[in-house]
Image 1 (cartoon, rainbow, N blue to C red):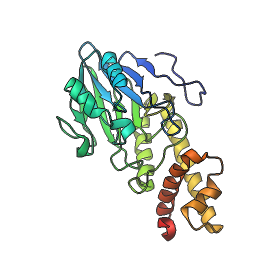
Image 2: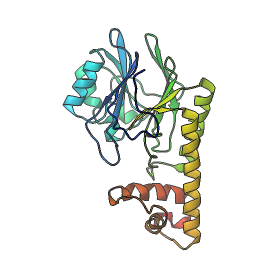
Image 3: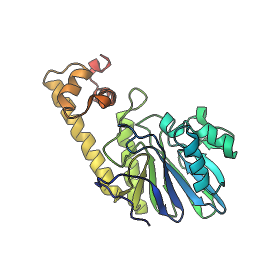
Image 4: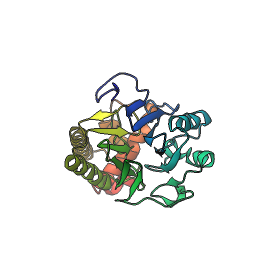
Length: 271
């Protein structure tokens, strides 16, 4: 493996080779929400065929770089979910390569079958195992790459910070269950790393997921306390709980807060 940044690293993330069979091509779409940009993961041997996970934005230069890194032999295009920063380029990559686009949401499927929990997409010595991980959105999937023993998590787990539960499509109860499912998969398979949709590779998946679960439950308690303290709208809760966020991501905090209030069954969460 190359010396990719580990969890907690402040070094810029640029993608690159993870192993002989896994490479990240970083999309040129950095932002406060996408971190360094979208990670497009290429799985397999370019000499015989590859699988692309999350082609990213519809950016010609990026898609050409993905095709080059895949040796021009892309057999499947898989989506973790349908948000544009992950899926917008799928149609163009399909048109450029003929590879089918496969996803849980059939609106994103092109030239092939959809994806479902426990499906296995195999090519050569590589197999991609599909895990349903709703919560960030209803159509979120994660993947377990058996040969490398790694989890590809899209936006369910990020390389830095925590993800948004994109209410009302996203659901916090589903998200917590998905984290528990990923923890169980990581534990039973002795997974060695998480390959996220944004940001650097994370080592020690069980520890990372435990930290995510601890953070979510701590945040829920903060929201509960804000409510008990008199906050009565999502905006008021954000003002109490998310005191250190820039205005550019306040909208994301509001979405997660609405999801938290819904989970706590607070009737005013629609306000």
